[in-house]
Image (cartoon, rainbow, N blue to C red; front, side, top):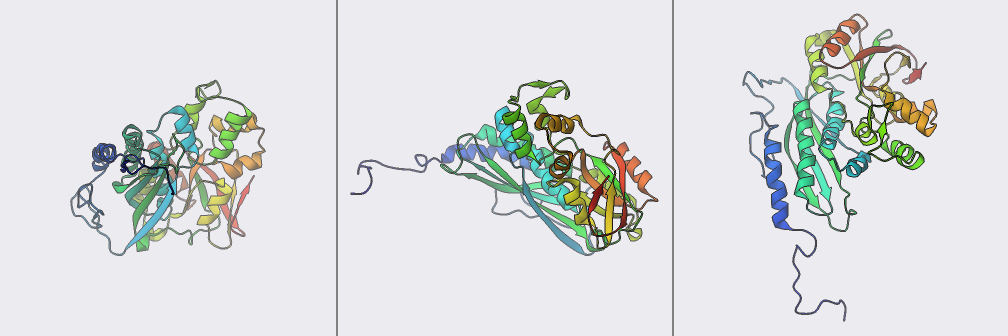
Length: 361
């Protein structure tokens, strides 16, 4: 006879690892965090099977009227930075990272991030943890100016180890077809502007964790004098969201003149791996490594792990989280506008003829 369960035993969903009452508590706690991101363009409430979002809206504050709207879609995750959040027992900022990784990608087309959805998977219901994560996602959506219109919370007993969880994010943006930025207008002599990162952002954490926790044997609570903060605080610094400032620049300059030629979000593979994605054929970029102020976390990691400089630039953003390739005649005014709006910006290179790629000098 198969199995050990006696005839008198009664099983239910809770015994299998999913408490529906606790699940409802989790969902109820999310509702106000979701609704705070909504503008009148969100046409429904919270909790339906799908969400409705109006592309055109005539209210003065939220007015959007597109002639030829194009939908732009992106998705991403946070990666092993979540391990640091678990070690710190601090989960209210990784949601900002989640939003940033998708909306910054969306921005590279010149699109306005409009809608965000999340997927959260946990081994068991934990309303406090889920609420902290969703708060960060809500905060990120407000920074990006997009609406958190829904998502999925999956409880997967036996799939994740206790204390583990994962998140994924999905962004839908909107671009006017005539305003899409694709790098095709890039010219020799154009200037490469580097927009400051806040630190590691959400890339390279497998290497960073190996350096810090395995090789150096540090704890998240250890204070690092060079950084002026603890290990955990430095590693959990949220990814910067560039949407508002970059979109402001795009609105300030005539589209027909194509002042902004290309945009690149600097994620995994660093400047060398991401800038070429915004370059057309026969255009190459020279970037001067000493042309910006690098956050101290990169030098600290390099020294702590005895990491070759080439490897550092291949894995990390090295202090540049976003790149704009612009006409040299407007580079100074664009950089000044970005600085005035709170993002330190430097002219870090120029466009030359050659196969798409980056020369770091």
